[in-house]
Amino acid sequence: MISMKNVYKTYGNGVTALNGINVEIDKGEFVYVVGPSGAGKSTFIKLIYREEKATAGDIVINEKELSTIKEKQVPMLRRDIGVVFQDFKLLPKLTAYENVAFAMEVIEAPPSTMRTRVLEVLDLVGLKNKSRFLPDELSGGEQQRISIARAIVNRPKIVIADEPTGNIDPDTSWEIMQIFEEINRRGTTLIMATHSREIVDTIRKRVIAIENGTIARDEALGEYGYEI
Ligand code: ADP
Ligand code: ADP
Image 1 (cartoon, rainbow, N blue to C red):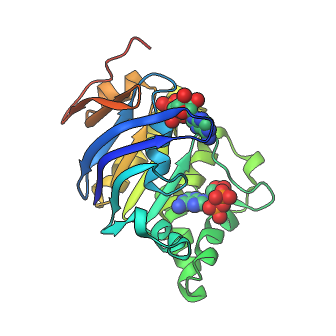
Image 2: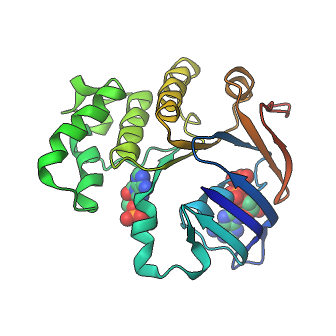
């Protein structure tokens, strides 16, 4: 489902963020990406949804070779990938419902299926009753649940989350994790960068640790492994 071979990423300022990454992630896996700040976790994640391009190496996502993909094919690639950000990135003037529906409008989904699907995913994240609320009328945890609903509404094969619990309190974080586990149980590949030792050591999954732009550990049921 996701394959990287000898992948390097050097930014325009000369910083090498990834220094020879080799990894295979299969359909349906749940993977934590851990490591110190500046290790290259976000860059690793951005390469998967083509927010950044690799400087060298081969990346294959859902059988698409990213180095040869044309710019106009990028939206098709992204259709298979839902992204959840630490800071939610909801559109502030749209309601919860509209934020989720917008993701379907962007891919020109048939309007007939829209309402049902949006309500279905709002229900899955437990926020059907707040569909008319604006983001700033919702708590951080609720906003994150809306952003998860947005990420899954088009039924992507892969969900990527970059520190999804970074801005929410610990109790709410467990609720968010339950939603991710449910999404994964339904067959979606889930990749989550996190600094939460509690989460990684409690809900045990595959752990890929990135240090100085390389994979330092890759363990089937791994541990967080850092002091904080
Ligand atoms: P992490 O997510 O593990 O904190 P990042 O992938 O964000 O690591 O960053 C890895 C390295 O790349 C860091 O040295 C960071 O400063 C650098 N970096 C990240 N994004 C950019 C960018 N857009 N331009 C230049 N350097 C960047
Ligand atoms: P940009 O690359 O300039 O952020 P996009 O059109 O890719 O513009 O995305 C616009 C907004 O839509 C992003 O800020 C993000 O919040 C959201 N978004 C984009 N792609 C996804 C995705 N695959 N899953 C969830 N939200 C997404």
